[in-house]
Length: 367
Ligand SMILES: Cc1cc2nc3c(=O)[nH]c(=O)nc-3n(C[C@H](O)[C@H](O)[C@H](O)COP(=O)(O)O)c2cc1C
Image (cartoon, rainbow, N blue to C red; front, side, top):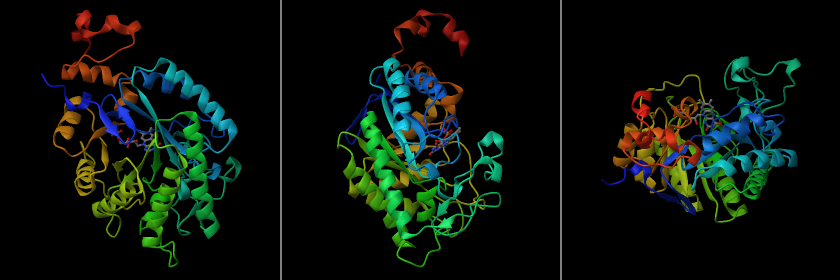
């Protein structure tokens, strides 16, 4: 039997992956002034033995003002770097052989200074230590969010420098992969999208997109070539007049020329007017357009839940790698169970070996 594609190795730039399973970045809202806590320690240790070839750490603010909430991770201080080193070392110590670690570096822009989701996800009130947000234009994401200050030229320079500085910290920490967050309505997406960037100066229109190129180029140049740099990009705003797949293809092509190794194609998050046709694999066709249009390493994400579904996406040629979000929160041993479902002998820690299906009749009863 040929090994299912999901369990075949993959190369993304310098990054050698044991399989095509990635854990998508997922905010945990558990940090303390940007610093990782014991929550991250246990979360990353658990994911490190999940069977995923790549574990991507959640959106991590490149500036303090670039965090979404007070609980978001950051990489803007030495204390942040130290705390992350501790949690990452613990995760690496228990990781299954070949497991690699990535980090998503991000700036929340006009969606920053918000409450954690379970606190309401609205703009921080006057008694909640709010901060001034920035955006391409002074347009709030929606009612209930702060109105951002329109970015001055200095802000563009500061943001680019902050991405570079955070990437350097990530490189020092030994991350194998760095992913720029260019999606979900956060700063870089809001600069790219005509729905939120109404500027008439050199940072409007194509000039806005050029800032995404510039930042990627600066980050790529700042870290060793042994680290794969990529980006999470927007396949569609799902709003009339917003970004469409062709914009994603153009951005991915430019990022490839700059030397980025991959993109993860997501969508939405920049307007409440969006009409997202949510359903199984609803963003796969956007990944496919990017992969076919550019040939860059392409990760598909979004309601890809079962191993069979993931394998079909890979077999169809629409993507090179699959990122899973909620499926791994629900079952952090998803990789083991996917291997079982697809008939592959995947590694488990030896301590847990006796629960392998071949060694334990109860496995058939368990799922
Ligand atoms: C709790 C949670 C936190 C998330 N945080 C991030 C994040 O930090 N960065 C990001 O790009 N996407 C984030 N997302 C989106 C996921 O990465 C993923 O794209 C989305 O959940 C769709 O994939 P899924 O259907 O496999 O969950 C988050 C999703 C969840 C459920």
